[in-house]
Length: 400
Image 1: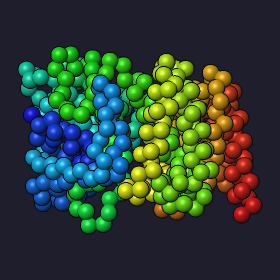
Image 2: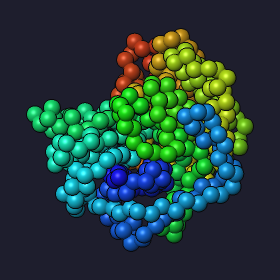
Image 3: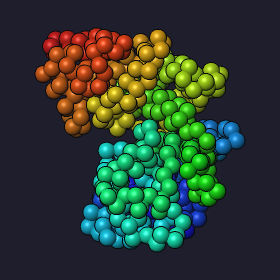
Image 4: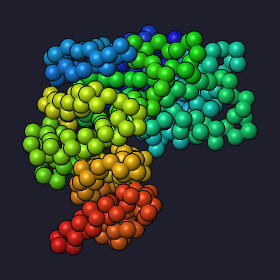
């Protein structure tokens, strides 16, 4: 069996690639970073180091406990291709693969789609369908990838659809920036979750130990995005505003921990109302997530987690997405809006989106900025609340 994975970065090697390896797949990494590709091809194994005090590992049958302390897994049977320099090689690998996965970021999927389309065109029509899963921090990312592939294929799309199946996934593992000198080894937290739609695969789902297959993925995707991603980003923005450098240190501040917890209580209220999830289960899940963020063995910085604030403030992302739905239901959104206010103060000269954010706040009035950055209509029940925190941030900028 063979899997082609787009994105040979830390998530690709330390999470998706690791589980595919454990499923017995020959791994082909595709990436455009030449030094990384060369480094991967220079070794015949790499090690995934799990560090920290365990954490709950989500399984199909419930929640089990991961080992406490450190655990190492050696990954073998892989190679890497520079898709910028050798696209034909990637396409040939896709033509004979069983599985294609991605961990490149939602905005990069448009560059991946043409390669997969070209691989499908070369694929033997009598071979089993290629199983395609986009493992991104976005709702229904595989659907997005499929739509991009359809655009790329044009009139040839109808003939290619029978050669692939597409399944959305929800993925969760914290993989921080790696220490200097680590090479292609990866340090990760013990917790992970990979939930995958079961119906698209019929009787032949992919073999991925540790992943679990579900009939309805939507609650898993939104529970993860609106708890893990919302909470992680909120911690980063409150921490940065307080002058704290790491996620773990930010949550050691009781005031910040209370603000983050309040935001997640609001997203849990939405998940309970929308998907019928159990309130006690959600409270336990929140506690697990916040415990993961406190893992001091992973020196994750607020600057890494907080980067790309404009994307994180957009309409269907981790703040405006749940807050908009909560506001439409008449639920509380004050803590989520407060987190957005902290986001607006995120000022990192090394992050282009942060620079753009601060420029937009200086150049646009509050209502124009809110409409442009969040995608909310002025009549939306959340709009005025966001305008208020934008105005407050703009007053701070003027005072400086």
